[in-house]
Length: 219
Image (cartoon, rainbow, N blue to C red):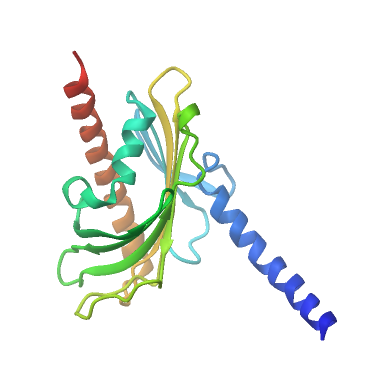
């Protein structure tokens, strides 16, 4: 019995370790060839997608903005204010929080005929190092709380992360990674195209928020 249990643990460790490593490494370094390729680039934003299109659609964005790392962290960790400063978020209610962890109910508005999505997220900032101006936020779907009844669809998969640090010449250097299967029989090519549009819109909006915040705090 002990031998069988030990073998089972070894099998589980072999299967789960690569998944954990992938989750932890998604925001560690900029995506590189041959696994990733660039799909968009301008002066401050670059988008990368996996070369292979199997599995849930995912995308990584790298941004370099003239703003303090802490300013961006404060926006993305303030889930209670997502309706005001994150596009398409209709509801964002913090259900429970500890010092480094939050559980949030969110509802997203989608253009018709697609149904709105809703879900519970578990998000953590445990790996942040504020003294170094290094910030890390990870999130994934959670079943800790029951979703309200209604016509909204729960995504089949939704996870991601932010890694924010000071830029080499000032400002901030950040990576944003998202992995999303919206569920509801949405074709993957539609989900992938929608993800590109959304991330561009999100980054534009966040940059405008940061610019306004920096301007208002200047003497």
